Length: 193
Image (cartoon, rainbow, N blue to C red; front, side, top):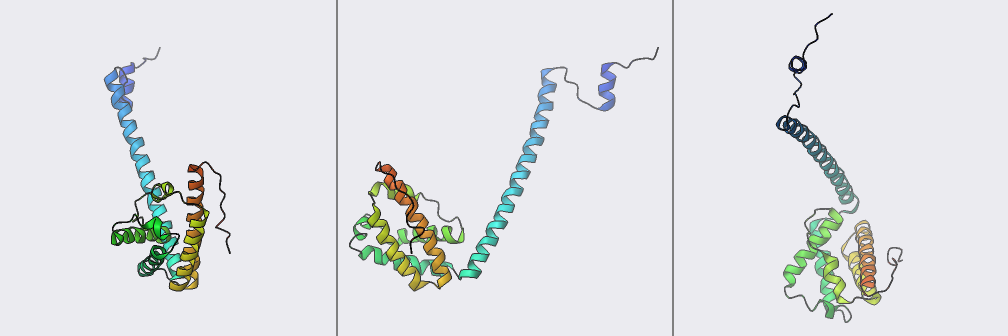
C-alpha cells in the first residue's frame, strides 16, 4: 500500500496557505481583497484616462470646428449679461446679484464647462434658479437675448453650438421650475427656429 502524505505536507509542498484558524483565513481574505481592490482601482484609473482622452478629442474637435476660445466665451457672457441687466423683464430677476464681477467670472466658468468641458464650474445652477419662480416668458426672453448676442459675437458654427446648449439649458430649467410649481412642462426650446 502506498504511503499517503499528510494534509500538512501537501499544503507545505504546494505553498498553499492552510486555513486552519481565523487568523490565517483573514490574512488570505485580506490578500484577495487587496488584489481585487488594486485590480478595480487600476481598471477605474484606465477608464478615467480613456474618458479624459475622449473628452479631449471632443473638445479639440469643437474648438477646430467652431473657433470657440475662452476669450470668446468671456465676450459673449459679458455682453449678454449686460443686456440682461438692462432688460425690463429679466433685469429685476438679476437685481439680487451683489458682485457682478464675481458673478460674471462664475458664468464664464459655467459656459467654459458647458462648451469646452473644462470642469471649472462647480456650482448648482438649478438650485439657484428654481426658487425665482421663472415662467415661460422669462426663458423665451433669455433665449432671445442670448441667441442675438451669440450671433453677434461668434462665428456661425460657434453661435450654433452656444445656442443649442442654451436651448437645452432653458428647457431643463423651465421643466424643473414647472415641476416645483406643480405643473408639467415639456421641452419646447430645442427645436425652436
